[in-house]
Length: 451
Ligand SMILES: Cc1cc2nc3c(=O)[nH]c(=O)nc-3n(C[C@H](O)[C@H](O)[C@H](O)COP(=O)(O)O)c2cc1C
Image 1: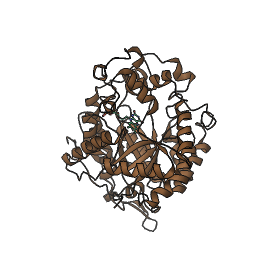
Image 2: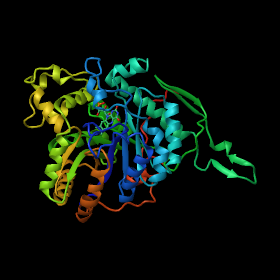
Image 3: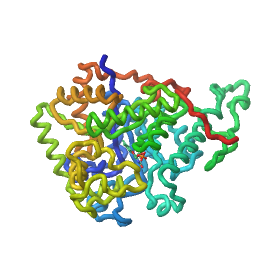
Image 4: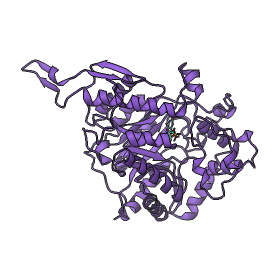
């Protein structure tokens, strides 16, 4: 039986997602700060039956050797940007059944306000909020912008385990079901016997007292994560309900999903009790030739220099400073992401610095699927089967919702015909839609609470 795919989209509140398309007639350079633009986009997704929109986010911006390259500002490469959390309530009014997944960092934020924000948004979205948990940041952000200690890569994940434990303690241990009794005749709003002070202390955090926000429909937001390193994936296996990967080709994606599922099993869970979602850029048109021409136009938007700047922003590695003939295994790694080059190591024909840059320019994040509606649908289904992944997260092509509209019009009916997509049950919370119970979370890892 063909599995039914979960579908989301990947967005950032910046002028373009990466490839600087803001100048293109379909670009969003003049609209990315306008809530009405985003409300229109999410309404399109919700009407079509997409499961979620993810807002990636970062306080940082691309740096090369500690300096902001001019292209970051002139070409709007992940700069400037707004705070997506503040848009969620407005979007939820426009798209009441769409999941809204927002990125928030465990290295920069604090557990109590984070728990409070997401619990509030669970109520305000009527059970459609998700948290993309990230730990990654550069010293430029932690020490520079925030003035706080910058921990190394693995330690950031140790801190994140405790951070999530405390958030879960606040969400799951403080309020019993039914504590909000609203009994007018007895003059009791909240039953005091059913609200409990939390008592949590770990190496990095402590919290004692009442959590003020009553549980929403999901109680705990759906937890997403995108670790690529062993430590990152162990964190996801322990804490997350869904993980993102950047599918490069079927073989690499199959390896990634097998590795993640093995870690989920090692964490004591059913290996398929976690959804694996890959990024994908789909370019579709009624004929293959038209789709290829559109894809060509998209690739022309991305100069080699801009690609190098974006790569440096993701990885901290300035490929332009290295010998183009340097072998991939000799490229010096760093602490920003442990494995920025791993996705290329198994790809045939990507052997040198120049090859990495060439490959990144045309495949910035996730699979690239181009073709006629039937071709695209068949490739998505075959890849999901072969790589054992549960769904896809689409990227916009030229910046606005056009790529999604084309996908909805041309590809969704083909996926449905193949039995790989079904109209969602719109009465469900995001957690339930992804196959987990609400409001009770599907699992809870052993806590690091020292009390
Ligand atoms: C689809 C996807 C979305 C991501 N979104 C963000 C983000 O919004 N902010 C961020 O700082 N990192 C983001 N990351 C980076 C990951 O959180 C993670 O740090 C990276 O994949 C490297 O893995 P590692 O931390 O295990 O080394 C994202 C990664 C992927 C694949």
